[in-house]
Image (cartoon, rainbow, N blue to C red; front, top):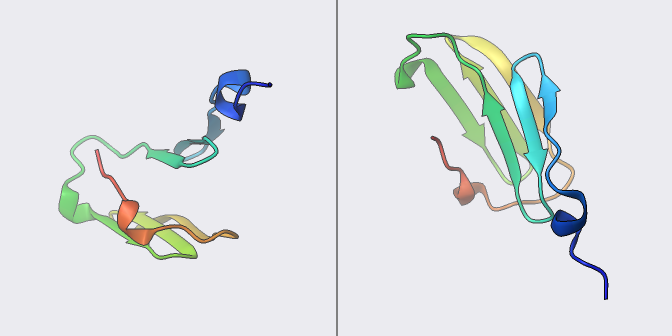
Length: 78
């Protein structure tokens, strides 16, 4: 029997101008680089079952329609 996808391929980060993202079969991770001194109040994040949006300091970083549904309550900020 073959190994699961994650075990065979590992996680491959995809670099972007704003940071990077990567995924497994079950999760998608988005890491955004913010300027030094950025406060939590400066970050606006919208997460719905088919949309994700992020702005930092009033500048739109990410706004995207997602093709697959996901649980909107699974957002973790670190």
